[in-house]
Length: 543
Image (cartoon, rainbow, N blue to C red; front, side):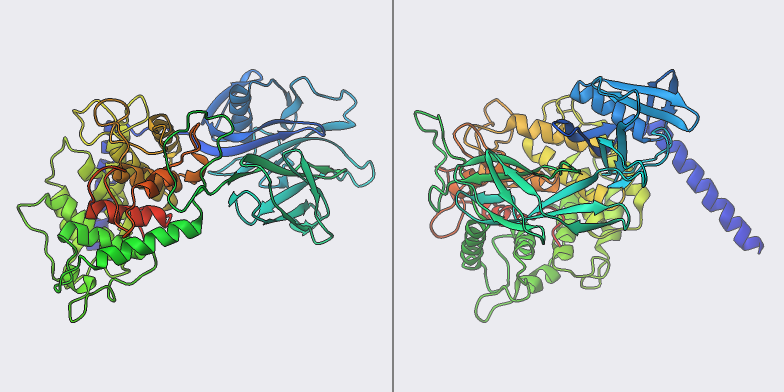
């Protein structure tokens, strides 16, 4: 029993010291993100994501703890609409929005969180990351007190070509059963209207390229959520990125999933021709990235081999990072490859790669940030239980985010670059997925930097402006992965000439499947491996 108590004391001491360290580091105070939608029978006042502050001051009081009121106050600032909030015996009451109210209370502002009615004050309802808040102006049945129920719209795809059909489904949230049920409704697509049937289904197509916000309406129900689709014209199988002389009415260059899959398969076949009988593709680094690329295409590294040669998996099993290499990046990359192949990162050819990386990381160059980034990615890929170490790395990255939202490869480098920003976005997105909190603001700011750095040809260079800003396939591949990790569609990142990140990337592909560094540059094996994962829509860590 004494041994247990002493061990417990040591554990508590370690935890206490760690919390002190976090306090000295200065844990960033980030907001969580929630979607807020405000509807009247005739208009949508606001619909968007907001970064919810932990504390707000309203109606003569201060309210903390990520409540519904915090989200509404922030939405009013972002959307530029007014809120009328008063104190009542049951908490804060939402009296008016944009001056819309009914003194007789025959109509009022009803609130829902994740579709369900909120029956407590807006200062009492606690919200969580990615919650959906719907506020709608409604009447109610004087007998049952039932209010208008909200419609929900879903589509089968959001990335399509002009004339391509897609499915639309409409349901409503039934308050009595707390479940969604099909309903006939009118679907608005631009200036066109469609009707869903009794099962809530219909088929839709668009005749003009562009971006459309689709929604559903029905008398007696709350207008549905909006779903954005991007419709474009396929110019040809290898989109051209040169801007035409007259860019009026230029179609968005849509690169379809089939085109991306075809490009990926051609690249894989090309790289197989470069594999030697030991299983290596060019060098250890490219071989590891090749394993990641194959995993993104759902192909096996164990079957990737030349006739009478070893497989790529066999080569990676035999490889040990060398001391004269950038050994932290080497181990991190190896872990990403092993995790992508669904092998044991703690017992890969009787080596615990995670422990080795952890030991090396403690002795790393404190000025470098790219080592931190890929080490964190590797630990996340391996799902290491050492969350304190991952938090420490993440806090160090966040402490070095630049004012423009970007990141660089070292602390003493003041200019943000696309590659390190794209890699960091993927690290933060994966950390968020695994339950690490307070990362949303950093991701939003970093995505904003990428958006501002996108070139007119749809691609990305290494830097925003300057001599290294010309678009290249490697930076564009990483940027595509970052965009996807932030839950955005690269096809919607279109420039005025219709070019997108995907269209630029495929413009760099040769007929044999290999990729050039840029449309007029030399072929690079590593660029080809990077492009495969991007074309397959997979971000790091690939599994």
